[in-house]
Length: 223
Image (cartoon, rainbow, N blue to C red):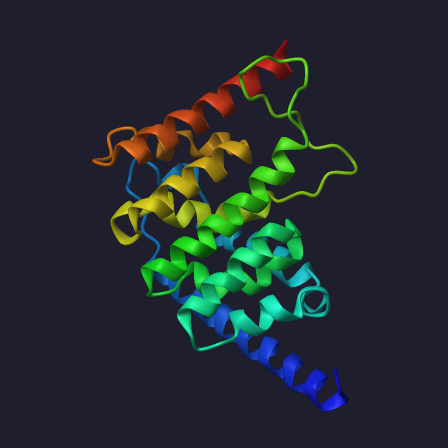
């Protein structure tokens, strides 16, 4: 790439990330907690942890390593954006997250679903690296080791979906539930249990699977 192209690309990513920060701020205001759940969660802390995590990632690394995917993502064509997200998801690199942030809060259901799916694939890939090999068919995730990438801060977008299922597409709820399970977010068990009565069987299945992963992993750690 020429110097001009590099400058223009960097300008695009800065604008994209600035937009993402603005969308995140809007979501904090819209966050609502039912009275029975309010004492259990601190949305402000979750969002702050999430923003620190996003800001700590090297977004420019993705621009250098996957320029084609980034060009598609920054296109105004939705199909190209969807393809770009899929390409980034296939990389399994945590540095893709800054590029997904604005799409996690997109008004377009299809783009939002793709962003949550890409995040879930990232979470699942890294969690399964810690799957206990001595357990049979059950999925048991071992605690984080010193070499494992900590993705716990991604609890914030997961929380937003599970906390307000009325505001998110059904498939987003499924991916959010699976993500909560693979991240072993045991504090989210009340939110997952609420999803067990969701009208969509796929969401019930996702919540049930997530609760099983959390419970099985917890039992293994206490044995």
